[in-house]
Structure formats: structure tokens, C-alpha cells
Length: 235
Image 1 (spheres, one colour):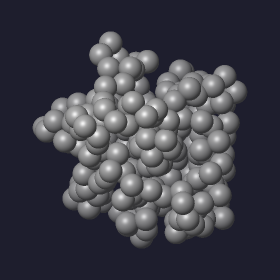
Image 2 (image 1 turned 60 degrees about the horizontal axis):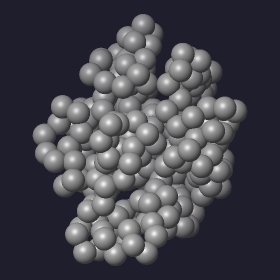
Image 3 (image 1 turned 180 degrees about the vertical axis):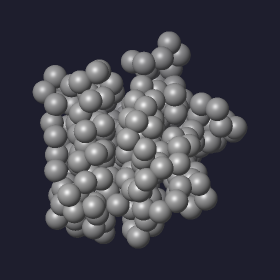
């Protein structure tokens, strides 16, 4: 956590990611340089936090996010959500609209447990997760497969956001790679259509993958943060 000027920045990481990733660290370096308040954290079962990943759900990680927003961060915040963190930032903005100055999504993935997992599972996979309560999926980023629990899928249905208009009035900037193999870039357009905010911009990065962690991507991200902060102050 860094103390500094408002609006502060909170980084919300992705599924099975942690607060030591390149985007989180780049944001910390940037916020330190410009004197802006900044918080990065690990959800339950991620990184340095206690608990088992397989006990986690969208709702539990939402509670973690609100605990940071309510108990650690001060004043209005710019939420930066990567992948699942994009779902978490939208949930947080809906829950605490008065605290959110703006949001920046990086390959934001609301509703992924239903749209990109359950609806993509074949009959055998659905039968297996129903019977055993867990399914192990291959990962492009880790040597070991990652576990998907039935609890994660079922809880995700209680937090779906893109099935109806989403009452979020703050400015939103969505950045998405057009070569993202995990979350289709069209998801950014779906978010833009769902939210009630009239201040929504979408940046599509041709050739960009899911992580968007190359040097040019990090430069784009930090510039987006400062642009959002200037917009909040009417600059």
C-alpha cells in the first residue's frame, strides 16, 4: 500500500494470479513516481493470502475486494481489474458507487464461469464436475492444470452482470487484446453496452494476448490511469 494523492488506485488481479505480477508492480512504480495512493492485494487462496484456492468463489473474492475498499483504501478510487479482476471491479462499483472514481479493465472477464467455462464444457465434463465437485483444466500459464470447482460455477451464477443493464455511472476504459485466446475481445463491447455510464471507451490491441504485460502494454496502462485521474479532476 502507498499513501498519496487522490484518486487512489486499487489493482484487482485475475484468477490464480497474485499481486506480484507485472501489471501490479508497474502500477506501483508509476503511482510511487507521481505520488498517487495505490493498493494491491491477494484474494483468499491466492499469492500470500491464507486459505485454499478451491474454497474460493466469485462472491468470496468480492468480499475480499470490498474489505480492501472499505478498510484499507481511503477516498475515491480508480479500480484497475485484470481478467477476473475486471468482474470484481464491476461488482465493487455496483456495491460502492460513491467510492469509485473510474475503472480500467484489462481483458475484463465478467460472467466467465458461465460463459467461458460451463457453457463450453461438454457433457462428460459437466457430468464429472457434478459427480466429483471439481474439474482440472489445462493452463497456458502454469505447468499444472488449474482446478475449477462446482462451487465456483454455482456461486458465479449469483453474480452474473451482463444479462441486464448494469447500473454503473462512473467513467470506464476497457483495454482488450484482439488475439486473446482466453476471453474474447467482444466481451469488452458487451460490457460497454451493459453499463449505464455514458463515459465508456474501448481500446482494442491488435495482436495483443490475454495478459497484456509487454512494455508497450504497461505504458498504455499507466497512461490510462493518469488519463482517468485527469478526467476525474476535470482536466
